[in-house]
Length: 118
Length: 109
Image (tube, rainbow over all chains, first blue to last red):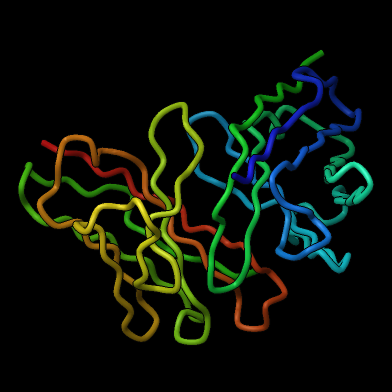
């Protein structure tokens, strides 16, 4: 059974960098699929942040591209998100997920709330 | 950037049929996927490849595609189907592989 689990600080100060990690169990990241991040501000819809393919290719939402870095650590079977220069508008539940064309986003983490506040 | 458009809300009575649409220029070329999200929970995939249903998803959930519009149909709606529904697809070039629609709140009256 594939499982994804987000971890990281729940509170980040404005202008700092938000860092989250998604630990994957039950499947080797290097074997395939896209791995990515989606966020959901309180009371709003889902927003794709970015994805990384198992080969290492990255894809970012153009509205966030200048501030986002997604990377993979195959030795730990996890992938990470860094979002720089955060503001209150970045307050959201952050989800990690696995996806593939023709399959969709078939496994999601439970989500973690990150609040940007001083 | 690429956008998918959904109606903000749909309301139906129990036992009726709910239809939720999603429009996007690249939908004739890219598969669409549908997710159900209940309050406080992560989204769950209910339709993939426009019209396929994952194992464990009730048969009352179905999907269809016509031109630049895809439709999620829930037949015989039940109270437990009240949730937010999101479509997801990619732009025509695949540069943006995970694009979401704005979401539709399904209310069961």
